[in-house]
Image (tube, rainbow, N blue to C red; front, side, top):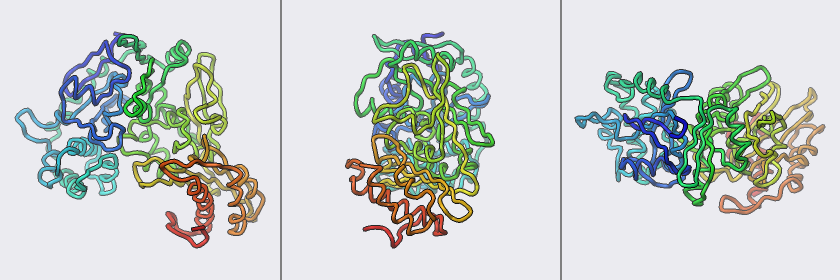
Length: 489
């Protein structure tokens, strides 16, 4: 069928031939299916009270990921398995080991956030047999407990990992083969169009179909992870029509590891990109760990972060500093341009009608170079940047600056190079004196704004100080430097 969205909800096949493009999974669960275990806390993907698991077929296997139902659109769920907290306990009421551990360790206080914590821990339980404390904490980054009950919750995660019952007890493990067969049957190569009144949502059958859809609908909103677009709907109450969902297109979800660098498909999520980044470009992997919580990283894509063009997107500054290029595709073919040239002005990118981001190529930093990324935010984890800076330095044999690329987000209407600062440094010795003198050149490169995340003065001073920090770290000072004497106060 090419007029219906089909997926599995817990154990039931769902087929929807009338659906608003912006209907969230949270609303569908609570209002349409009366599955009220999934809660609405923030409606913006921050608190995790709405956490559910979504299973999808990847390379022939069934993989489950925690996601935020409050910003996940139902239209993005074709050929997936949605699992809510109601599915965990046995029919006779026996709790799942994850749920029982929360009871045993007193992990629930007021209880509002508990279903979301259970689902995040369940996702971890499915994928990691004996998680470390760090892995447990990472899995819970996207879940907030207003009663400050984190320690009992962590203890519950530790307890449930010690003695795992037979896999046949688990509702997902014992039905895995059946779910895989049912999801395979839902997949097809046809483009799906679902209407609700005059509103439409479109699920292209292939990347070529996507190009044709956008040629026919150049003003359509393309949605991959919806971690930003979801807020347009839940916070700004925007109406989007038509909406084109692409998170199912496996041809856009490939990470190709080659000698010169990584080619990352536009549909690759942060979680999917993490392993390759951790091996080849660790500084960006560390940055990814600070982008949202696990649910956001399981949904959000690097390609979407680029295509959205936000001046405070986290990935463009380090990618620009490394000299990344972006490939754009349409029915007229493909073209490639430096990523820094893709961003023209606030809200404007070099993208012709009908074009979409297909992939980004990221060169590796050479072994004899220095590369660092700094994210500055009010809260270390799960927070939007006030500014994000990236530095890529090449020194010659004499210790002089042969090349340097500096890029910042949050300092202008687009992610932007600090070309005046770079010019002040190139050809000069890499010394504290040189670096300190170059700080003044930031005033020629950036005129930041004041908003609720930071003042213009704070942003400008911090950018200057990050250059000093980068110098000190290349000179042997420890990473994650907390304070140093040469900064202004």
